Image (cartoon, rainbow, N blue to C red; front, side, top):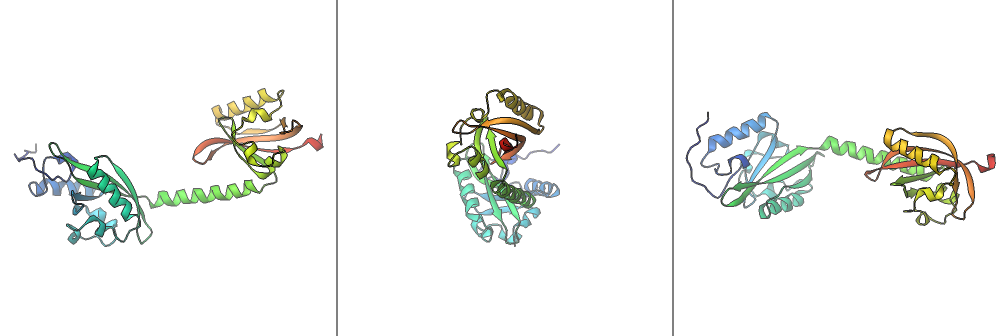
Length: 267
């Protein structure tokens, strides 16, 4: 069992679990904490109330050119060659002023993205006395996110210029229509339909079928296969269509994409 030395409470601390101690008074404990964090692969930088680096784990070497001589330097100098440095400084100052976690994203010259989570160090009697910055390499997440955005962009371009009508619904209302859908509904622009209930564009006799398909699509997470029904144009004209629907993610939220074609002339 570790015997805790009797020490006075002081104004600076460097790790939340040891908020009543300083590195100067308990070097062995702080060194052991750094060793354990390094063993766990944790990248951490400690700063004092003046935003000067006091210590860091070996894994924090993901910061370009970070060496032990950087201890004592201003945080802004240590991260100066990284995009997002100003955001990190602002986040750290916010933590020192109002003790609550903050997050900033940094881009290293080599192209690595890091997420920096800044948390306060506290002294029970004196409040915040520094901050702990935990760094996580999120380059792969950023790469996958970018790839997803590019794929969504390509899909959007295909839908936008497709001759097949497509509209997207959220909570039963139109949130997107491609040019083909706008034309077939007889609208001059998407604004005439955006935000409107999609059920208003379905023939009353086919509305139970349409609602049932949407309910099954949402509840069973399965695509609604191609079927025939009747849609209504803005001028009240009825058109026979073939439609199919699928669940998608649209602008960060679940939605239903309906692809359809007018087959009135084929009847």
